[in-house]
Length: 217
Image (cartoon, one colour):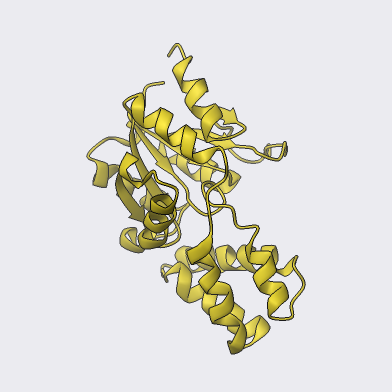
């Protein structure tokens, strides 16, 4: 591997969003609506970026909840983000990558503060040199400018960065921008052939650390 900086997507890649389903049930909605809501937030964020506008994740998320479930559902669901934990493979994987000498940053479509809180609760915030968000970039991933912002913030070329995500659209966007990529596939889902193939495919962050340790490049 040639990259020296590893950038991590946060929502779903590092954080386990499954507890949000219980929040939906608590406000009278079916559990599966949590996934639909999250997808709709991403859709709206992408659409605004294409149109030349950018709004914070939390703003879009709250409005979608208000529209679909009513104002009384907004705070109970959004407060759930403050209680999310990381996937079991995340902490050991991040520690191993940090100890191996890689520079670690986040690059999230969500807020930097949520990412920092999540990783602080997991005891690995100290492994990161920066918590980057598209809020500061001005463009949501997978827009090329979001990845360029991260490279500039880290003082490296895009080719010196590895983007890690569970989302094929993020992997595709990063690859098209010139980054190496690692697709985290915890559910044995086939990667879409319509997107640029990842440099690596791993089952978790711990598996990524092991893969990079034995990568001869």
